[in-house]
Image (tube, rainbow, N blue to C red; front, side):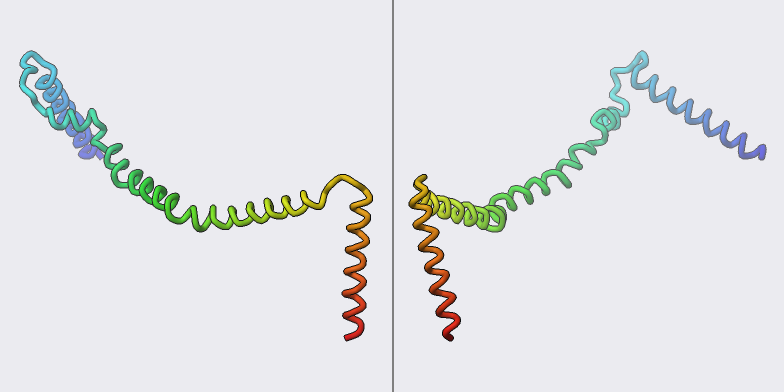
Length: 127
């Protein structure tokens, strides 16, 4: 009703008057007086929210990530991967020795492999 509208208008006028007073004291003729200087500094620095966020959230996660990369990563992630890499290198070296590029050598390898398989099959049948 009418009371609510009058209350809203009155509150707006009071807020306007307070704003004008603060602006005059800060920027008016006698502006040398450091009125609300602390609040202005806080407002200018966005109430130090960025610094607080950096200190409370960003820095701890950076420390955690650094610890994980120094302690866990070499043993959990990189260690097993290096084992696989070494096994592949060893297998590559072993196959490099037997790959000479001559078809007759490959035929000999096949004959040796078939002979070993035949021997194993014949031994398993005699059991």
